[in-house]
Length: 485
Image (cartoon, one colour):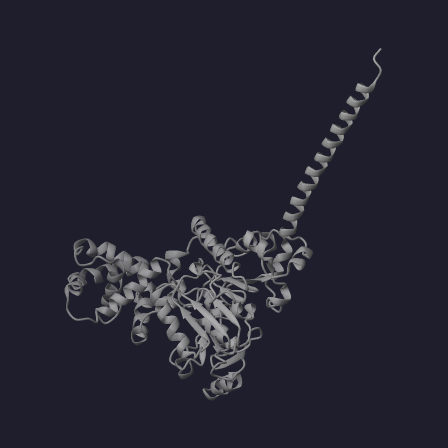
């Protein structure tokens, strides 16, 4: 029965919007992951139907003392109706379901008749068609494998270096060490994946680490502020050639365990995992005060995700346009992360990214960050376009920025059009005070000019007042010295 409890917990966390299907499944113990993954995915495929059946059969009402969790009831009813039965020993919860087995099957038949379908499979949710346009990307872990060696390995598996069929692959034109395969190809059981030699990672998800451009130095110091499950962290480690120190923060205990496991498998020896909240870190702490590069990929709406799994929760979470209140809360949190990162005294470069397509989480957060006291006092500005994937054509939305020219410094990916999930990347860099004063239009310069203008105006008023006072005084002196008639 523990297996069903684990699957129900994943569904609970999905309902609470604590991650994507893929990321939450990755937190399940590896020995149970494949089985749990299959049940979660299949249950989600039939969830609207299962909820309807459970409601019509009234089993949770009649068995309210035993069936207290909707998601646990969902996975159990799924196996009664669409699998070979509940795979668990007899117990009160299992018996509570089986007492209504006949009624459950009757309600299933009613739904099939109502919808005019004959097969159970016709009741399942269909995938987001845009997902079929996204190749299966794998990133070569250069800490363990040379790119050429990896390509020879896939050639030995029957793949040909092209990109037209299921047995062909290609090198990505933008991201080094990234290969793309047919969308239907799976590597979950491949020896190279199990050994940590390849990382299953969407192309757009590789952008932040490349844009951050971490140092390759024995004294380099970098932070990944929200690390789990570890794809971006392992990418940073590879780009740093396992040198220097990479602090990987993850506040959730379960996700932290997943992070540790992945980093161990990928042989990321320069990473120091930290089970703590990045926002609680003191930037002046000697351990972190020398950090020069920070990667920020905070929680977001996930509105850009159209992969092969998350369409399953779209009807529950994102079928409608994201509610303004939720997006505002997310944007406030995201801005808080950027402003905190700007407080680190030695930081020179901050990459901020989301898997959202909403400007409120992307351009609006960036423009607010640029006007913040932290950015003005720290002399932060956006990195120029030639430092932010200049070969990538799709940039930010000019109409959403205070200065439309800033949009060229931003990177966007649109699902269904760029062969990736929806994504957004920006990069803040610290410049010298002199460079900051020469930047036009600069918010800090504007503020200084405003203050200067006010000072000049005050000074002019004071000068005029002194002139009038002196004139009046001289007039009185003349009058006093005049002869009396």
